[in-house]
Image 1: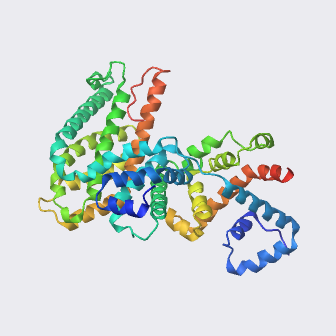
Image 2: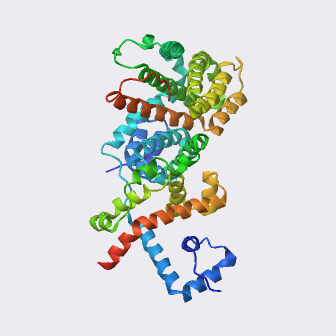
Image 3: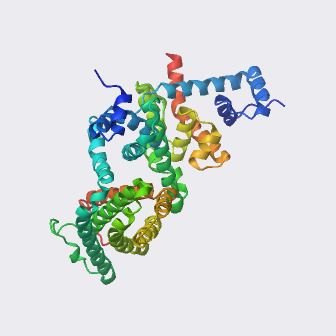
Length: 193
Length: 261
């Protein structure tokens, strides 16, 4: 029977390397999925996973024993993802402000515009949604994920991403419109069947 | 006048973020306008679809990969008091980096192929750009490791700063060469990060022998406030990507003399 997180965390906190390894084994897949949803690509997701575990390792002594470890890791991962996105934004801004709008995520989706034929051929809703998310810029994706998935208010999203409320709104609007354009044909197809 | 709701208004309404003063108008319009109700319904269906999607799964065996990548970094934290034993390797690697970079810079100025970039273990077919990018990547990894250690050190152990000074001096020298090279090539983004990095490395290199907990706290704050570790990771990742792209390109086109571009 699998040992409960609480006791594994307690051992890890006492410096037991195997216990920390067990936590990494147990939660890394979940953290990766979360980081991928936030960042939109595998390389960044791997970097976020690494950073999140390093932070967890450093802050393990502050973890409340009664709290849920996965929830705690979830929060750390979201924050690490935001740090990465903000750091990248800083970099992209210095390079060319348009890069964020035409970054790698949008490049990936450039030839994946939804057409009725493509939608009709697709039976994998998850794939279609993930493809649609791939059409978003890094900033749109982060803003959308924080608002839609993490349930933060627009104001909170703006604070997290270092954006003014109006800019945050526009990022979310653009994201939703792109998602809608990409997925509405699928909704219509489903509606007809 | 009863104009239709905009898509933005529908989105705000969906998220319950309509301005309080606007809620009654939006709801009353939705109640009376079939067209907007339909648009609202469509939006909700799309969002339900988004909610129903399964997240992207990690590749098979990801846990092992994550641990293999993580464990050395944890070792770095734990063995910070053993810096003495592994410092010479870093110094040697830093020296090699400096030599390669110096050779590279000389090569640029003289426009002659930078032959000195050849190092043991590398074949003569490896062009200077690949060597440089690999060395820059190594430099960034080493710097990242040191900053990570310092950022994770208990502030009670401010003497760790003194232990890192020689390594910092070495890193400053390599960093300066790379930064100058990046500037010469107009790679302003990388040059910017390296400039910030250099200031922090200089602080470490010049820290007083009896540095206080506050000195260490200040340094840790700078590392955090300037997002140095993440920015470093981002350019290290970009360097890795450039190296990979360079390898792929070198299969198709002759090697160029452009260094960091």
